[in-house]
Length: 87
Image (cartoon, rainbow, N blue to C red; front, side, top):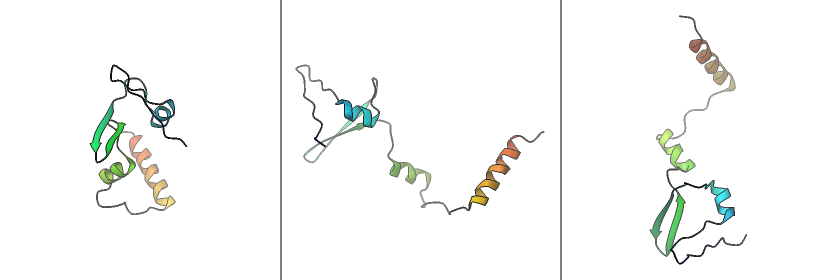
C-alpha cells in the first residue's frame, strides 16, 4: 500500500486522505492530536484509548482469573434473578 499524503494549503490547512478517515473513523468535528517527536510528528484521534491502555486501566494487576462457561452462565442467571426479583 502506498503512503497516504496530504499537502498544506496557502491557508496552512491539510486534508486527511479518505482512506485514513475511513480506517480511523474520522468525521467532521473529530479532534486530532499532534505530537512532535524525534524526526517527525504523530497525529491521532483525541480522546480515544488504545486497547492496551484500556486493558491496563481495567486490569492493573493483570488479567482476571478465567471462568468456565457454567460459571459465566450461573453469574448471568443470578444477576437477572436479582434484577427482576419482586420486592
